[in-house]
Length: 220
Length: 344
Image (tube, rainbow over all chains, first blue to last red; front, side, top):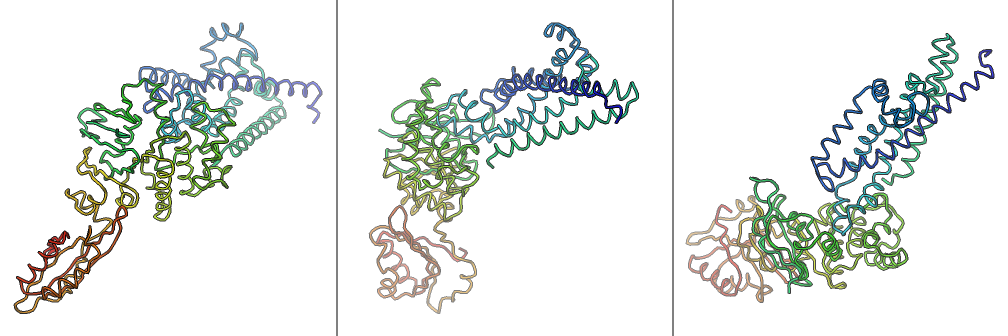
């Protein structure tokens, strides 16, 4: 354990907190943007609250386009946009931009699926009781889909942890970056192993938390 | 004024598709329980959903309590919908709301304050016998209990009209009977007009005052339940009626019947007992007065819409003219006598 110097511990702590920032910030943005997007996709889709194919199709295409672009390419491809938003294209803050973009598209689809799981009959009943579209969204659709939305968010968080490791390529830092630089490039397999172990524990924790929340919220 | 007046409703789901509704007109009087019966695909579900415009007909007029619904804007239509409760086959409860929260939903949507909502829910739950379940979630309830929640929710905003969309079709016979009794009871207590659709004639028999039979998007027969049951005119209606009062004679029975003796004839008839003579000892009177023998092949006595009603299959033996006389006498009493024929 002589490699575990105080300096190395500092690096690990710093890497972990960078990972936390990247994952946390991009997930928060992705939920904030992905949910309205999913609601829009759901509402404008066939059989939705207000079907509008001219809006639904292009929106769906856009989401698919972002989702099918490999993350490492997406990251490089949107550098001008990242610079516009973050002021720079290098660093942890800058890495949040492509991460949030990829996660938004990913979450929009997962959220849309969760919304689709809500029984159409419950929505019809709300219509029959004179609910407005907005009331149907806020009082029926989202509350009924909540366990599914939480489960989707958990999946996205876990994926983000993986993506964030790639963000090292644009100087985003984080545990993944640490593992590559020390474990691989400086031949310190112990560092690599430690990083992987921390990530495994982190992902496990996220998954367990998500599962627990879903169990608590489901009433089936 | 009719509580619900539908006139010449037509609806097609796709151009060129067979019509879901074709020129359907119905008038439902205040306070009555009106049943619409038909096979799946007959258009009855579309029809009931046209009453609160969950489905918009392509043409025609929907009038509820004197209000022309098709001419309303969205906000006015929502207000009109709050005056109609709807109960669904699959209950359509919110899985993540408790019983009390489900029942409160229409009140919440209407903008009622929480305290008032809670008071109203406390009035509604005893009405359907669910006080003890107020904090349970739908998954913890039986089918019958779920439908009771559905009914309490439908009645929450104090509607004059209750629409039941196959409300008992997902329930077992015993629970069905309970729910139907509840609907009848509530109709009287709350002065409701009930429109219900079903594919089960037994439901119509036990709860409805009047009935319309639908087939291929049209109403093919309509009238008081007793009349439709005792004197169906359409083949489809006859099949529906037969489901409940099953007049068909088991084929094995016929082959075991004795052949007529020399100089005798045998007639197989179905006799419908309804009206003032339905309780008369017709069989023994006829055999005494006309010197014929009557063999009862099948029979049952029942009550439809509160009136006694019986149906009986008879094998009658005797001299041909005596037989004719006996059957003629039965007809003269107002009983419906139909020949079943040897093949029946």
